[in-house]
Length: 139
Image (cartoon, rainbow, N blue to C red; front, side, top):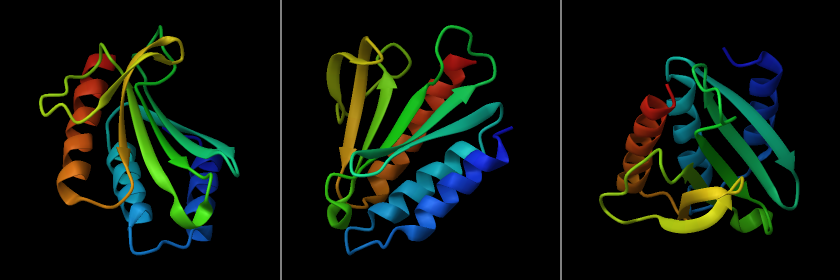
């Protein structure tokens, strides 16, 4: 179970965020809700205004890593925020080859990152499928 103060921080961030026509806030909230509903998953939130807001998910059965996915809201321009969703490379597949392989890019390990600068229902669904895959591998 996620610490309620973490959820309060995420919700306060979301409430303060004025979305624009890219609907990135909608994508973020949809991804957040999916993670919250996943069994055995706890969330952490790292807020670095002007840089990023990072939602990190961990499965209770994980022993070697402190997360299985990181959903970053990139905040270099608050009026044009975008998402970077990153997984460890050995925890997911990328059948549609939508992600970018980042050697040693996720806490020193190879990772896949998926960037989103506007809401796309298909891409959100694809990321949720990767969440489920990574969560299963983490457990």
